[in-house]
Length: 450
Ligand code: FA5
Ligand code: MG
Image (cartoon, rainbow, N blue to C red; front, side, top):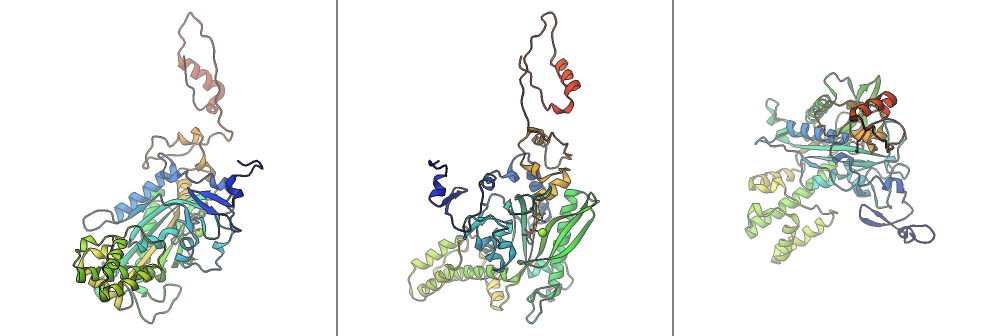
């Protein structure tokens, strides 16, 4: 620390968050207290109740959605950095510039460009642009929210996205081939978006709601009393919240909805670029399909081959690519694996639609855990008190655990030494009984050291 008591970084106008250094500005409102929560990663700590909830959600999705070979189709991201850009948290999710969720009074801003994510949805667009169709993001999120037993400035969310192609949407419908996901001159109503047909929207809504109800029942019990409440999010329409009755009160567990077409469409542009590149590489340069897994590799290949029309294409595509920041790390797009699908996608795209429709949801892990384990206060999840932690230690996500209240006072350790009478052996159990009869449950543990 510098002589005036200020941290060196503060003097230089810099702030270090999660290993990155950022310039402070008049948007910076992140406090040292909030910084102290970063890196705790409760959702991946062994034996932590929030980790059990994460494991249960992942197992549920793995079991429910399997591919043709029986393998899970959802991929899980549980260690993405909570430092995100304003673009990721808001713009990529078409959140209007004046939306109240962007307010300084609601978010922890590092500076005008970066903040601690306010929801795990912040990663949605980037993962879609990487070509993923089914994924789950789990992590810590940060909000300047009210203070009570069920709200905390740091909590955890799991965000899922499922994107379906035309055939998947109508796969269980008799004569489903005749139905369409998109319509040309549709209207936006409270039941659907302008681009989508009502039948596609309703089928997706049914799959979304039945998935979420099954998930809630499998975690909270079959006897669950629930209701769906219509709501709005900038990134889904229509949208709902799932509320469950707990101790005579309605508790909001999650938000969900049909993904806004504009978000998927942006991803589709990206897919189209990949497809065009692959076709050129395949047709003109003879590169095998299975080599075309890294997009940056493909762009580089194109740039290096400066032959006539291809070089022109390369320039156009590179300009096109530069619109997408940050560039996705790996882009192994399933479409690129087979020539026939590439052609099908291109044909589809050329009709102006892209034929994908998706649903998404975001659930609060603490809300689930508080109901399942009977944890009365959201602050307890951050406890390092062994009286709290030992109730989950060496347990599994499948165990039935009911939390027993521990003292509200901080833990303290006392040493007691005494002489034992020489004439008889003294058993530790004699002392345990003495402690039990005098102190009851206030004493959590007695260790003997003879
Ligand atoms: C969202 O955060 C949306 N991103 C969810 C979403 C994702 C909707 C994808 C549609 C598609 P919301 O602000 O309602 O929505 O938060 C989602 C859940 O997080 C809530 O239902 C609740 O379970 C939990 N939650 C919200 N605020 C808090 C808080 N301060 N403390 C603890 N849990 C909270
Ligand atoms: Mg909500």
